[in-house]
Length: 109
Image (cartoon, rainbow, N blue to C red; front, side):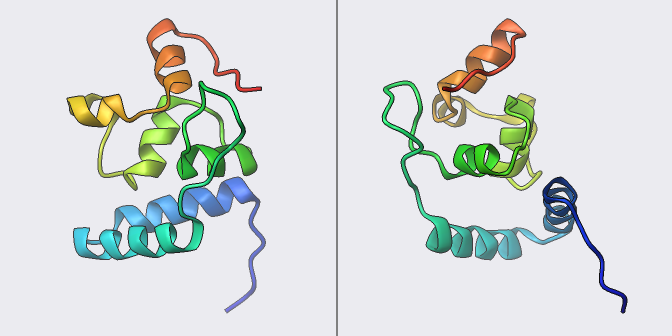
């Protein structure tokens, strides 16, 4: 098998595609390993930015900051924005929800 070179975006897209094909049990195992490896860490000391490893991943890897991308990464493609329930909405980063509701771009400083 020939070696392939991927950009970070291509690798993230491949991971998402592969994870979408997994069973719920396999996805739970992936979540467990990701939580163990990365846990929850503070992005920076602002009141507005929650401690969120998905958002931190997006910032570090240049993933466009949008609610759609966040939901796809956080739920491994199992849910869309429209499928989120009340408690799930309540736990979303304020910045992404605001931008989604107002049709603006996310700005985190």
